[in-house]
Length: 290
Image (cartoon, rainbow, N blue to C red):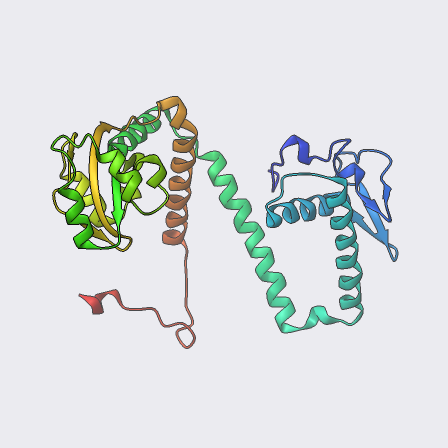
C-alpha cells in the first residue's frame, strides 16, 4: 500500500518535478519511479527522491496550488535543501535527544500511520449498489425544497413602506416600476428582481413571509429585517429538482466511505484495550449526568 496515491501528473512528468532546479539548473532527466532513486547527497548523506516527492506534494496542498511550475519546483527544492542542512545541524547538536523533539517526532509518526490506516480503510470500503441507492433515496428526500421567484422593494422607513403599498395596483402590475423608482439596494435597477431562491438563502423574517404567500400576490404589510423594510411580490414557486443518481453518485460514494471510516474507527476504539493513568487523565462519568 502506498501512503499517497498521487495523480499521474504528480509523478513528476517530464514537465514536472524533473524540472526542479537549484540556481536555475533543471534536472536533465525524469527521475525513475524507483525507491532507490536519489535526488541529492548532502554532506555525504543520500536523500531519496521519494522524500522530496512527498515534501513537494504537501507544499502544493498547503498553498492550495495545483499548478506544477518550474518556479514552484525551484522554490520547493531550495526549501527542501534548507530543511536538510538545518536537520543535519540539529543532529550534530544532538537535539534529537530533547524531550520535546522526541515527542514531536513520535507525534508525526503516529499522524502519518493514522492517515495511512484511514486512507486504506476508505479504499477498502466500497459502497454496494444497494447502499448507494438507499443513500440516494435519502438524499432526494432531504433535497426536496420549494424555490421562490420574487421581487422586493426595500425602504429605510416603515411609514414609507406602508405609503408605497397603497400605490401598488391590485394585481401588482406596477410593482416593478415602483421598485425601480423607490427601492434601495442592488436590485433597484432590476425592478427588485431577486430571481429564484430557496428559504435558506434569505434572512428568516423575509423567508417566513414568502413561505406564507401565494404566487401573484404581494405583502400588504411591510416585512422588517436588519436591512430595512421590504415589500415583497411573489411571482412563482417550484419544487427544486435534485441531481440525478449519476450526477450525485460520486458525492454519495465519498459520503458513504467517510461514514464507514467513522464506523470502523469506532469499532477500533471499542476493541482497544485502553488503560488510563488516572493521575493524569480524568474521564467524565457519564452516569453523573443521569
